[in-house]
Amino acid sequence: MFSTRMSRKERVRAAQYLRMSTEHQRYSTENQAAAIAAFARRSGFDVVKTYADHGVSGLKLSNRAGLKQLLADVMAGQSGFDVVLVYDVSRWGRFQNPDQSAHYEFLCAEAGVSVIYCAEPFENDGSLGSTLVKSLKRAMAAEYSRELSTKVAAAKRRIASKGFWVGSRPGYGLRRRIVDEQGRTVADCEEGQRKAFQGCRTILVHGPDDELAVIRRIFKLYVITGMTKVAIVERLNAEEIPADRGLKWTMARLNQVLHNPKYVGDLVSGRKQVRLGGAPTPTAPETWVRATGALPPIIERRYFDAAQRLAFGRSRRRSDAELLEDLRDIFEAHGAISTSLIQAWPNAASVTCYVKRFGSLSDAAARIGGKSVVWTHRKYEGLDRDQVLARLARILVREGRLNGKLIDADPSLPSASAVGQRFGSLLNAYKTLGYEVSNSPRQSSPILVAKRQAMAQRAESWAMRATN
Image (tube, rainbow, N blue to C red):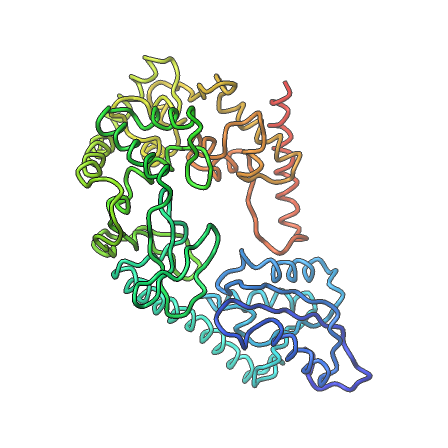
């Protein structure tokens, strides 16, 4: 462990780690760097490298490219420095499990690199006193985030209950407008812009007339003419009518229009909860925040209610036997099972329902006699499970990794979402190949290297099937 009291002849090469979220100006990376530079001059360190995470929460490692690179360099033994200087314990991280913060510091220590906190009242020398204070500081950093999360969530619920918009993108046919305390317009927000006015709020207003006409047409086709959702999507795309942000229409984008109450003027928020960097989790309907009449309606409520009744008839709770009977009928009628055939089948459950109930479409198909799921769309006609895996493996061998973007870019494969539906999720497809997604900073770990070598061998075996 390095002492912070060194003579000028004992100067040590050091790296600095800077992190700023958006909470306080005193934590700006410039202020941190200035404080660290002053500390380094007093203590005999030469700062030779900088790692930084700008505007990033300290709750988890996955979104902190700077810290991950620091750990990777240290563990690879190619860092070129002996000390990491950090402003204080909270800049290293506000991990909800304090042991996680300690673990990353231990990885550095194990590789011979010390971590020193420049603005803390203790010296990180491994003594009992410094260990106790540091542990307390880590717990306090985590508790600060928990308290702040609770306060922010309560404030958002209060604002949403008054009919203000607390989301991000407003959705098709709607736009965001900033208003002052008297409700007067301050500015209209374009795509990607954020509110930057103190004391102002955001509301939703109607968008262009052509988008409003498309929304009304969608409800007419679905409720009055009885057209299926698949047929509506195909018609809109055939007529080259763009969806939100100029994208093509999909089932998900159509459902956002047909089933979101904001199109009858009601805002409902809090349907999912994201706390402390975790994954979104559904909440109970009785906890949702509802603001009736928050904006003028685009469609009449009777049409919206009719659309919900139609959708409910399609998605009502069915037994496994009923779901499989529908699947059997689809196969007997078309000689194949696919996402589009299920979506177009009258009163059939959704593809998501089959995936959740049976694990994947392939597993559901196996229940009716081992029939394989195929794509019936253009050039993917007849593509079976093993062929999909072989083509995924070909990407893995070529790129060394797999993700949705690479799958979407491969013309020999369906979309990443379609592959995910086939296997239940993209992660299930990866596991079938033996591919493991790892965020471990220990790139040179013997165990990790062995796993990657085994994965590469399995992937090459699968990829050979794509060329045969």
